[in-house]
Length: 406
Image (tube, rainbow, N blue to C red; front, side):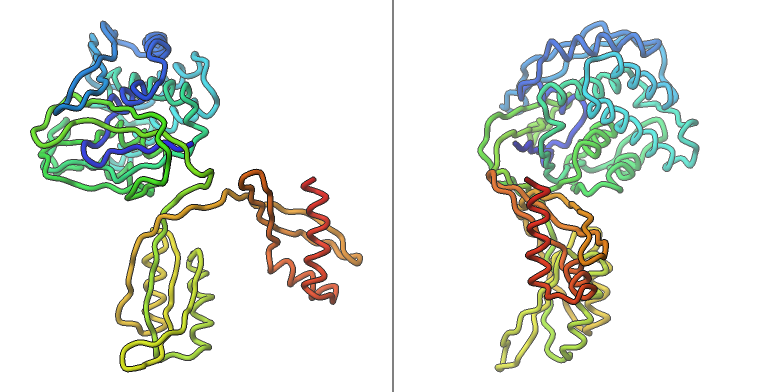
């Protein structure tokens, strides 16, 4: 199963995600009951009304949170809110994954404020996030995700719309997205994008929940069979789009999916030795794979096409290496979505001809069939040590691993 979170147009806030999860099928009564039980841990605040009702945003029917509160405090220490959330989740029948998730969300909020203002985390004070609605969002979403079993599913996020213009809050006016949003997304692999909405479309609470829920961002929907759709409405209304967060849950072909970058450049004036050294250097920079293809370009000129598969965080170092090592004047960059067979890294200790070896191998399972591949460097090391062919060593190791697996 896979869940796609689609904040491409309207962004994301805590109440929008919570509402969309209820529209997706989360138990509304269970969520409201859990939030009311948590109210006791949040001082100076009372929930006078909480419900989830149908509404329409620019013709799109969605679920919207209706929350009325009576509060007497406009500032709270981050540690107070964290304790209230931790006490709340401990008091509810939630999985360990759910409790860890809820704590990680408030930790992200506190950490972002600490870095922005240059103060220790235990000294962070919240203004906008000091309301009980922060607890409502985080605790409510945690209950909903646990109820739907989503902590055990693949979660993909489309690029997050943050809006545009400026925002005014307790620290004054600044350009949108505000510093807290940028700080939260900085250490994630999620993508943000602006638009012409002169408003904040993604809130700090929505950002921290999203960043702790998934690190997988894709520009396009994966191949999937749609099972259910949830629409969660925000509080604001806009003229040019529906202020609605969309969730799509479905089934895939049991393959994992992710997105990688493809770097390509043509080189026609360097030796094979340099190309061989180039492969080693690029792999050391974190590339997933490197391939070199021979070809013919304009005027019948022979060329070598260097193709590198890598992740976003490795691009800069790999591009530098390509330019410095080959002298190329240009590198093409593209993005590619892919399916990946789930695999695990395993190891086994064996004694061969009186020598002890640790053998690493990758194990994959697809449609009930399990396969494994032994790390070639280990095959090579054992072969050289016991002076037997790699083919013979591989056959021996496969028999031992098959005994272990069966």
